[in-house]
Amino acid sequence: QKEVEQNSGPLSVPEGAIASLNCTYSDRGSQSFFWYRQYSGKSPELIMSIYSNGDKEDGRFTAQLNKASQYVSLLIRDSQPSDSATYLCAVSPDSGTYKYIFGTGTRLKVLA
Amino acid sequence: DTGVSQDPRHKITKRGQNVTFRCDPISEHNRLYWYRQTLGQGPEFLTYFQNEAQLEKSRLLSDRFSAERPKGSFSTLEIQRTEQGDSAMYLCASSLSPSGPEAFFGQGTRLTVV
Image (cartoon, rainbow over all chains, first blue to last red; front, side, top):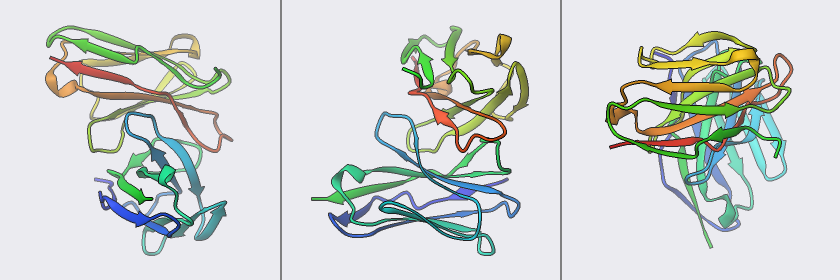
């Protein structure tokens, strides 16, 4: 069974610190990787997508992908209390099909 | 509002009743997905459509579940003879294939079976 693993947390970081969220996946053929943020009772919203090995930066967010290790991570710099949410790692078997396999999510708490 | 719209937002039903949810995707999106999310878990894929064709169904989608997308626009998800285990958030998402960069999620329908 194809799986995506995340530490459920909570991960607590002080305001202004770097939050590091990690995800591993079992299907070596996975093509597309996504990080979604979900506030309590709300729907997931896309933070980052990454398709090739290496780093991808967007503002305070950096996604890192290592296909050989089947590992994807999300770094949040200068963490703010408004970043407090559950971060879902999602993996898709091919590009263009959003038949995601989601992890259980990591709950992030940014302490003011 | 041009996002993905789901109706109703909340539904409480008695065990054994049938329920139907509706999803209106972003207008130009040709792909539509249904997911189910239980408390403390990530969303689980149920099924997806390209236009009016249902291309894939998860093993999670038992015979009591049926989804349709007539005319390739809105979609409905029906659950027959609801069970307490069906209590969850049902999320709809849409995307533009093949070039769309992501799937956009609606606000979900929270189903409670009592």
